[in-house]
Image (cartoon, rainbow, N blue to C red; front, side, top):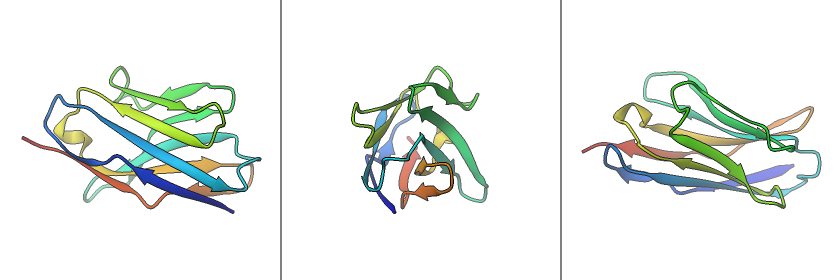
Length: 115
């Protein structure tokens, strides 16, 4: 099992920045991909960004150039640096750690972009 604890959400004005963190514990040795999803009110969960063990990252078109995903060298924590935030980025953000068989999800952290 893998346990995930997220932090860093909050209220920010349009154009501002936030950094989300997700720390993992437990059996992380088989984890090969880490990432972030988000779910806006009344909408489905959507991919924001992922990063593999080799460091390959991919992003949703809506966040390219504004968000950056990274991880620590121990591969126990994944980060999402969010810049130039827009009201449409408002959502609950969930981290995910995946091995070949299972997806592990964080509890979610709320991000609200509003003036």
